[in-house]
Length: 98
View 1 (cartoon, helix red, strand yellow):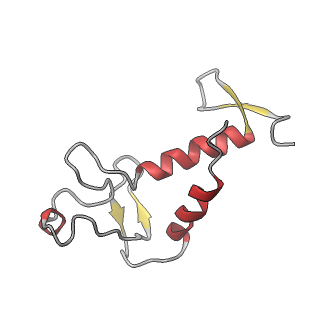
View 2 (view 1 turned 135 degrees about the vertical axis):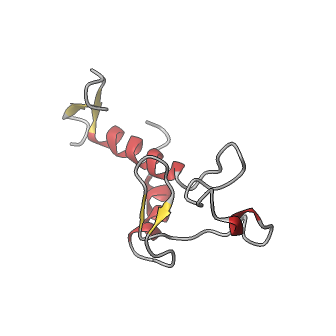
């Protein structure tokens, strides 16, 4: 049923996708927060905080309460296990055969 309806995504692009394809695109965007950037840091690690450059913490993952929409930097409490832990479910549901 999700493949029946198509919507423009991203808005203004003229590109038409079904709901499953849109869900997969949004999942990939969220997953980018947890990838390393060009400097080898995770996107959500604050670049101005010195602890993230230390060997002990460089591979440490935090589940922040929310993230900056443009940079992916973690904001709010860094010990959340609520919605951010759902990233595992998103990985499991991601349809790579799209």
